[in-house]
Image 1 (cartoon, rainbow, N blue to C red):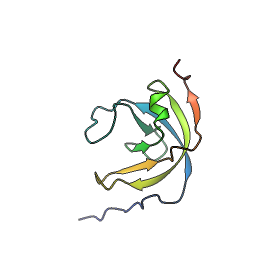
Image 2 (cartoon, one colour):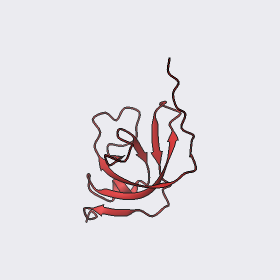
Image 3 (cartoon, rainbow, N blue to C red):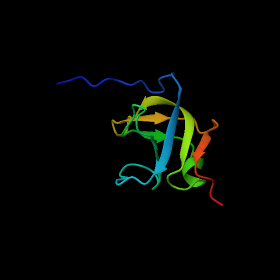
Image 4 (cartoon, helix red, strand yellow):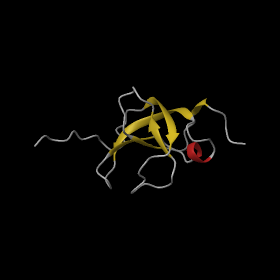
Length: 99
């Protein structure tokens, strides 16, 4: 049986990541209807991003952002995800804020 590579919780190495908000097909075990995922081609396809609720609350679905993130492990579901501290600034790449 292949051994699963362990990603340390809050791995300590932070990097800039481009993400977008979206409506996942399955929200089982997750909070809220709108979620955040990395844009394709960054090596994190299929991962979720834990970040500030402002991204899903204050901007339309499909908005793209650039934020600082790190890898971590999800002890509740056994999956992998990225996390970004909610207090860090982020850059809006597109579109504009909800009115």
